Length: 210
Length: 222
Image (cartoon, rainbow over all chains, first blue to last red; front, top):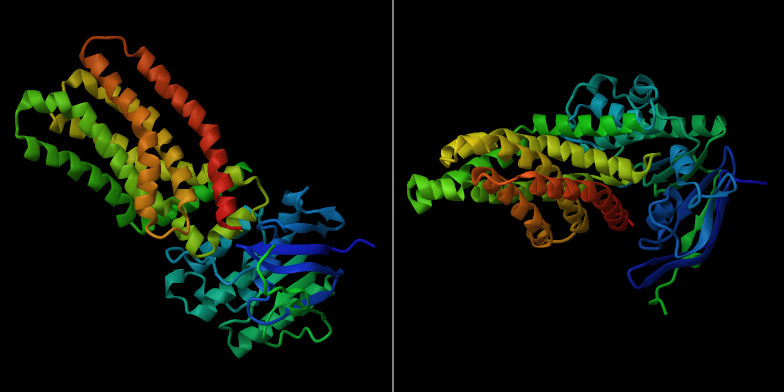
């Protein structure tokens, strides 16, 4: 069967250090994978490879069976990558920030994105006045405003309060019900108890590359 | 794809206009630098007229320099650049849009200010039109070449100084032909070869530097 996203025999090298090697993963439609491992075991590096920022030193990542290096555009159109940084422009309002990213992806549903993370009341506030948690919610609102089937979430729960965490859980559950896949690295509870666990410690190296 | 281009140009323009000072600073630097010359070399009208094209061109290139480290730096720091890289369109479109916005916000004000400064430097009036023409051909090239430098120095400490060292030598041909075109008109010679060469520089820089900038950005975000 073809998975929405899968990878085989992946090696990641950063600087002169092998972060991990021989790593494989797959996530099915409606499925979820939780990345675990100590700090520096390569969770962010793996998510970046999955997003297509940089290529693995070895191995291939496939999106619906197609190597993402061969067809990067349809891969990019179908994923969301939420990184540590929130990419919020201080001078633009919440709505303008979201509208920009939505327009780059050919349109989407901005009001429902704002509503999903309770940003409706903040929509005309410039992003420079937002707290860390509110900026995070703005980054997460992209997930809902722009439809795509694979979510790559790097510590999505950082700085979120209880209510927003519940919203995030609800959105992840809804996304999976609709057949979407989620790959997340997190230390908080995301309602992913049934997710496959990928422990990067098993693949990680703490020695220099030969 | 054209929509992506427009959206990015629109966003960068809007950002620069809201942070008002940023866009204004470059053209103010241009005006002040040129103003320093009459004060420094003395108000001898003939001497100033002789120096005018060179001084204006050098000041314009230095002003462009000031804005280069900001071209990609903010997007790099707040994570926007990664998301721009993940836009479902060739990165070259994104780069071309960023460079176009940069030209609109720095190149265009410099062009508008240059005839004014030419008056200031006592340049003969038949040189105004050709000065603006050379700037019109030259400032897009300086934005294009500068973008390569800006992208290469992402993440470097003291990137602003490094970008000057990388990019200023590449501006030399631009300076030579920009100034000699104006001198040719003032001296009653044919201006065509100079303008053709500047046009050739623009035609070469357009694909080459967009391609190189995209490669440097991919490298920076790996």
